[in-house]
Length: 87
Image 1: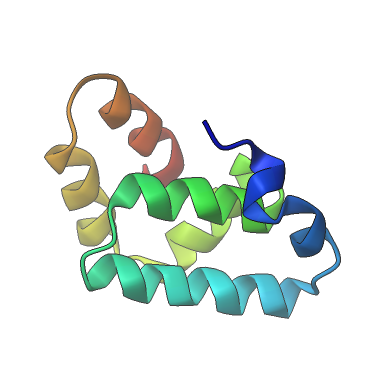
Image 2: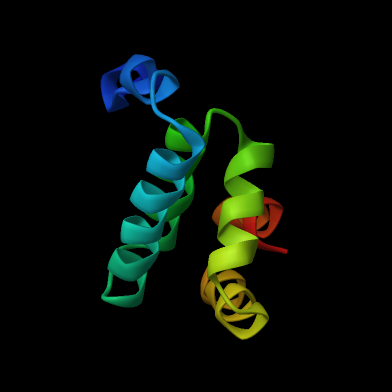
């Protein structure tokens, strides 16, 4: 299983807030194009540095309808995790 460090966490710590926001915006566009929501949330958390910061970015970049739809598509434990990010 990949660890957070495997995803470039140390590199992202050196990025400015604008660089992080821009990279998360690319992930959001990827999600709109078919990227699984679990990957969107996981990588956003690594880039942002915390779930709280990732949540702020995702709330700003996705509409309420997009966020609700993403949560409704998931089931079980994954739905709980995604809900924590998006609602």
